[in-house]
Length: 569
Image (cartoon, rainbow, N blue to C red):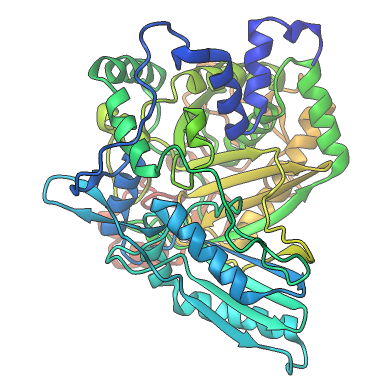
């Protein structure tokens, strides 16, 4: 950052560059005792809620997941499986005991959710037994390959039970235990896999290596709060006045925003989202990461903002849409006492970008900065409350408010460190769920920028997302080389096609689309009579083609298929 960032605006930008957790911690320390920066108006600090035997209310985020679980009971979108490899002389019994102690320490790891007839509540169980399976692979010709096959098979077989076990972060909806841990081992080579919804914080996990004996009765400082206390506090601090103030901001911010970011899909969107998805991992070249950092410093924006702006530019070129709405997560830990807790605190905010006036990428950067900072300043309204107050058009085919998500992190990924053992992550099979149509997660660590696209397999093919990842890198190279390049002059998403100029202002099709694309299906004259063509790739949509053959009299030549860019000619 240069000296121009030394004022309040620069401070806000530097805060936005931090990870969500680090940003929350810095903001709380800056606020001091007042809690929200306004002396005398902040709500009381979170405190232990009385345990009278009556169930505590669910948090707003838990309520949302509970509803999604009821609507899509077979979805794995919010089940996150991780696997790790531990090399060394591991004492499995002590590791299992440590996991049991961790479950006892955090109520949320033995909590299930229930519907009482008028609200969703948390049921905290006195104890749960963490599922534990051991498979000896010492005689396998290739223990690593054998372990990976078992992980893949067991993950598919138990996906449904994982989903229910993970709903509250641990215990299942019926009070059954979770998260499950399975162990495959050869001598000095151990693997663990955990199905979970929240990070498993290992600060309370006792040493499990034979080389470093643990004390017989380890003592940890007591937790000041439990997740249930947070849920009570969250509802107390969201007064009617605060909700009205936040809702008023978001109504103005999102006034006139499109309900759907109409990405070009590989097939028609189903009438209801299934949550089925997959992941594609890629890496941004180191020279482009350094160039993006240099661009951030020279334009007084953060790396988060620069990468988000590049993603927005790529989405605009890919979709032909000029008013784009993208979601991004915030940590939601609004008090220091929440730092050490396991639980679902994350909230989502919405960042809107308008490129209808054909701005340069430099101009887009500053627009993204302004919109991001405003969104962060108004992050306290839970997303479910935001949807309730904005009342957008609801459709089971897509998420409300935004369908594309962007996340950025610049902190190391946590892993289990045990003395006498070496831990490394293991790739879990990618038959994951998808929370949105498309999510991009970027993580910067040790000079590398790793990316993961999570996408809905109902509407996208793997090769499409692989191509999008390559195109994003191409866009990043173009804008770092020339920040003053107009967004409409960025490379065309279709390989081998030269970029085209935007339509003149006032043109009926002024929403600039890449060459060969139409901003509305009616404007394409390339398709022959009775044919159905993809504006993204020129391929024919078999579902729409069959429909055109069988019900041609009822299909308008200008009508696209539901949720995609297939159109009849």
